[in-house]
Every structure is written in C-alpha cells, then in structure tokens.
Amino acid sequence: MKPAPQAPRWRQSLRVRLVLLFMLLALATAAVFIGGVKRAFSGGWSEAARPLLIDYADRLVAELGSPPDVARAQALAERLPITLDIRGPQVNWSSDPQSPHRWRERRLDDEGVQAGDAWFVRRTADGHRVTFGASPRMWRVVPHATGWLTLAALLALVALAYAVVQHLLRPLTDIREGAERFGRGEFGTPIPVRRADDLGALAQRINTMAQDIQAMLDAKRALLLAMSHELRSPLTRARLNAELLPDTPELAAERTALLRDLGEMRDLISDLLESERLASPHAALQRESVDLPALVREVLQELGARGGATARAARAVRLEVAPGLPALALDRARVRLLLRNLIDNALRHGAGAGSAQPPPVVHLRPVAADGTALEIEVRDFGPGVSEDMLARLAEPFYRPDSARARAAGGVGLGLYLCRLVAQAHGGVLTLRHAAPGLSVRARLH
Image (cartoon, rainbow, N blue to C red; front, side, top):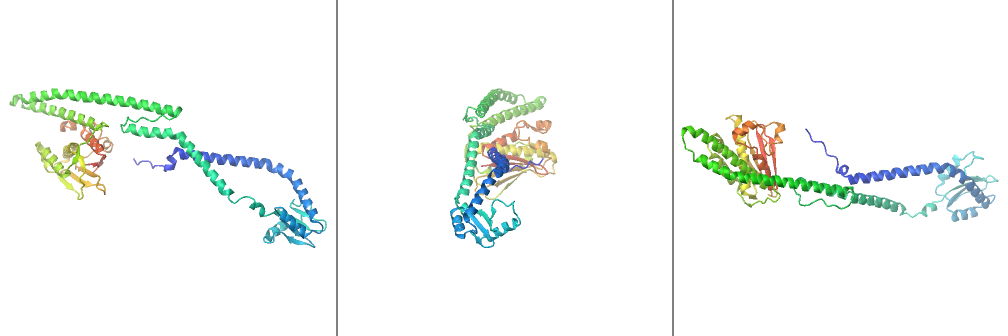
C-alpha cells in the first residue's frame, strides 16, 4: 500500500495554524465591527451632518461676495484645506487649475440640479456656481510613515501572538521529544514539567508511564539473563554426558539427535544473551580496524567446515567487493555474528529452490562519498517469502515456516540479531524481495 502523502510542514505545525486562526479571527472581527459601525452610523450621521455642512458652505459663499471675489476665494483656499471652483457669467476661476477634469466631471454630474444640489455645490443670486472640494494639503497633514507604522504594528502583533502560542505549546514540544526518546529506549532523561496546568500534568503522567515501562523492561531483561546464565551450566553438563555415551550402533541415532538439540539450546541461549547486550542502552562496541573481505572469507571457511550440503553451498558463495571500500573501525565479534547469521540464513533458506539455483552472493560496497559508511548485502536465489511476512522477518522468534525452520535448526533470532548489530553501529538493516530470492542489506557507520 502506497504511503499517504505528507502534508506541508506549515500545516503540520500547530503553532502556525493557531497564529493563522488568530489572524483570521482578528480580521473577521475587524470587518464585522467596521461594517456594523458604518452601517449603523452612515444613515443617521449623514442626515445629522448635512444641515451643518450646507450652512457652513452658505456662509463661505456669502463671504466671497456677489459677484465672487477671486482674491477672497484665493485667501479662503489658502487658509482652509479646501478647493474652490467658481463658474458663472462674470467669474470663472479654480483654486486647483492642475486638475480641471475633476471639476468638469462634477459640473456634468450636477447639471440641471436646482433645489437638490449636493451640499458641496452652492449657487449665488447672480448666477454663479461655487463647488467645494478637498485640498491635497489635507492628505499632507497625515505623515507618510503612518502606513508603514501601521504595517509594522500589525506584524509586531502577529509576532507577539506567535511568541505567546510558542510559550503555551512549549510543553507539547517537550512531550513529543520525550516520547521519541522513550521510543528509542532512552528513559534516563524525563520530560521537563514546566507548568502546573493540564499539559504539565500530562507530562508528569507520561514520565510515570515511562518509569513503569523501564522497570518492566529491566525486570524482563534481568529475568532473561538470569535464566540464560542458569541454563548454561546444566546444558554444558548434559552435552558432556551425551559426548561420553558409548558410540554403539544402537545409540548412534539417539546420541546425534540429543547433541543436535543440545546445540540448538546452546545457540539459543547465546543468541538471547547477545541480543540483550545489544539491546541495552549501555552496550559498548569494541571497535577496531577490520579487514571486512578477509572476515567474510573467514566466516565462509567456518561454515564450510561443518560438513554436509550446507557446507558445500558455503564453499560456493560468491564474494563481490566494490572498489573504494572504506576501512571503518568495527566491532569484529559483532560483525562476525552478523555475517555468520546472514550467510547461514541465505544458505539454509535459499537451498529450497533446487540445486540448479546459483549460490548466495555477498556484496561489500561503500555508501557514503566521505567514506563514513559501508553496506553489506547478502542475496540468495531461493523461494523468498510473501509480502506480509517480509516486514516481520527481523522480529525476535519469528519464523515464516516453523516446521521448516525447526528442521533447519533456526530459532528465529538470526535476523533480529543482525538488526541489533547494524543499529549498534549506527546503521540500519533492510530486507527486500530480489526476484528470485531475498536480499538483506546492513549499513554500518
């Protein structure tokens, strides 16, 4: 199934979404308030102010005289932030000659208007018409920086809102980071409890839950280690007693089966102990310079010395080393364990496809240009596994075919140990279908 596409990062941020919600709410509130006030006062204010403006305009026209005195009109336009346009039989003058089109448009709009003249158009008794307008000086009174200051104030309010939201949601960031640490098994650093509110109580509850989980994991690990250690001694004695049985034809089959079962139990205990050591957050790697191709050949030689069909297949495994393989400092014992499990798994489960199938292939290649990582790939040509089983192959004690795995000697810890070894080296283990067969890649740093 294809993964769902991830949403943009800003849509995943609760802070950004809250700030956007705050801004939309502020804009909507301002729009509703301004629209309501405008609607409430437009009609009543217009009716209340109209008589005052008409009376004021009539007084200004009376001050101009009849016929209008241009000098008085000029002084009036200079004293007040208004413009005057006088048109009539004797006087045709405008205080704003650079924009006569405005007066023409206004005259055309008011042609034929008598008693219904707008308040800014007044007529004198001698036939002159005086039109009042707003002077450009009125807009110069407002500083030019007002718009920029308003924008800066709005941006400051948005920044303040984001800072407040950041402060309010800081505990959520702590909880997320703490959950990631707990998921990696790092229980030593609890989530800081910054406030005594609901988020602080949630952080405290998660810390308590993490402590309980750590206690359960520690108890399980201690029990498993104790049982493994206690079982080693009786297993060693049982194996010694089985080796000392008389090598007679009557007991040969039973002796061989008993030694095989005891060997499986020994390997199981060893794998359990190693898995617990690697899973521990305090696991330390003994890094040293390792000749990886030589180590692969040693593991193949060790597997080839067992005897039987698996040993013959081990001697046929092909090793391919890419040029430029970096010489990393690795834990030799753990990498040997990884190689042995990967190759042994490929030999055991790749043989079911028939003898005509090619032997497994081991690839060693660099994966980083700076020489800080390499990749080990072991690929077999067997029947492989189904898609739903592929994701579970590296789980502890998981075996796709229990009966077949038991007959082959597997206990379901091989790939799990390989994943732990890769993670301990700062890498990752990936499994994929190779068509045919299975490909397992371990990246080491």
